[in-house]
Image (cartoon, rainbow, N blue to C red; front, top):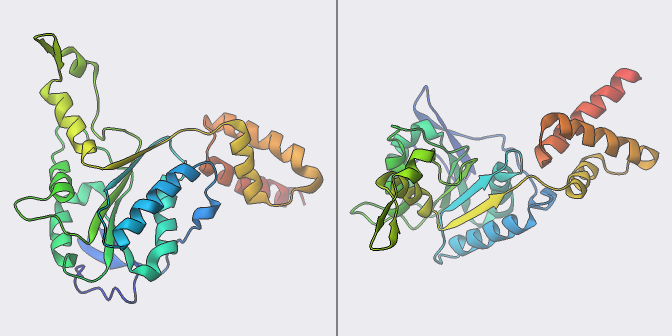
Length: 261
């Protein structure tokens, strides 16, 4: 099934299936409320504002969400679909390794009345990986103008998507007193520069993390101090404080309590 044969009035999202090389309509969507995303309110507000401009037919940017793992980057995309699908927003998720199909997908949907976010999760490229070229063409267009009803929203742990090495800096040149980046550095920065909106995510402080824990537990009553203490120990073992870790701790703690009963 290609994207032009999907009944988008019935389906809000689709995912690319690599082995069968087709778009699968999503029947059971993992909706998330944007209001539940604690500690990243600034990022959520910025992405919502950009998405609202897009839906209104105004100029909007491709979005890169980069930084610490487990901080809700992918959850924002699910939250956008929950909030804006009634306004015609649809999401197509495609893995990085299948970006070679991206231009064909865009051809299928560029004339449709819906607004599409192409979602690439955990986007990064290794040396010698040329698949990013299809993404660059989609972001800025070729001889054909970019479609007005499509934006790319991507998440990554890397700011510049391509690996950065010490040797890149060593190949800089100084010409007439000006520092000139090497071709390798320019190539790596040019891809991320095509995302007009780039938002960073960092591990949260202890207070914010505990607020995340309380969000999942609700009223903890007399166990509040104990749960806080255990959740901090759990985060230390994980090596990061994040929304994902808070959610994992909630499941872990509930499981432990069930075993003790």
